[in-house]
Image (cartoon, rainbow, N blue to C red; front, side, top):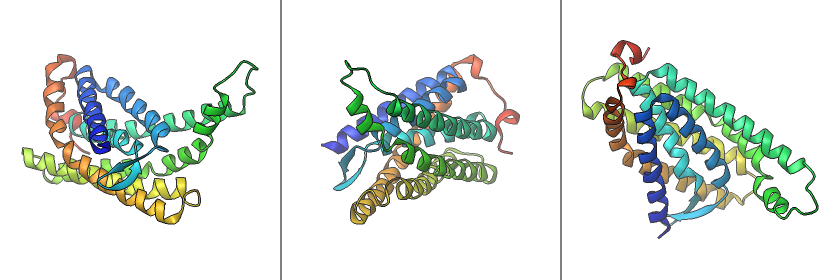
Length: 236
């Protein structure tokens, strides 16, 4: 049953991303940064997916790699790299603010402080892991750009470069992030299962998000303000 909830959440976020594509690249930036912040909060929640234990944050985070591919394909590699940088900035700001919120003395009437401390105590380590694991985003953009330069034409080429770049970038991110964030915090056997299940989950959603690359082209074309030329967004 948890698989259904996870996939419904993932597809809902993908459709929301397509709506942002219609609004333009600025909306894509804002939406993706929001996904990053929500994934930071939900990464500590463990769920069952295909018989293995994984993190709930895996599913919303995977949407950010779809956004990377959409920006690379339709607005250019430079815009995708700007998105990676924006996500890093959001991670740092999130870590700073949540750390300060833990350190700030609570009022006598406060009832939420203990819950906030429980939720955000691991945030600095998680955010530090996320910052280092951002190399996965760079891998995603680099692979997509390389494949786009080599095999530019056709729907199959688009599907392949989206799937390959998303899956490999996500895998790099997964291994780096979970090892840094949770090594020594969780038993090794549990951590290994979470990493393995996250790899499987990201492989699954990396395949399932392919139709949204084509929906993004349609949504972008509906808004005249999104008009671009190949010289504007070709990989370079």
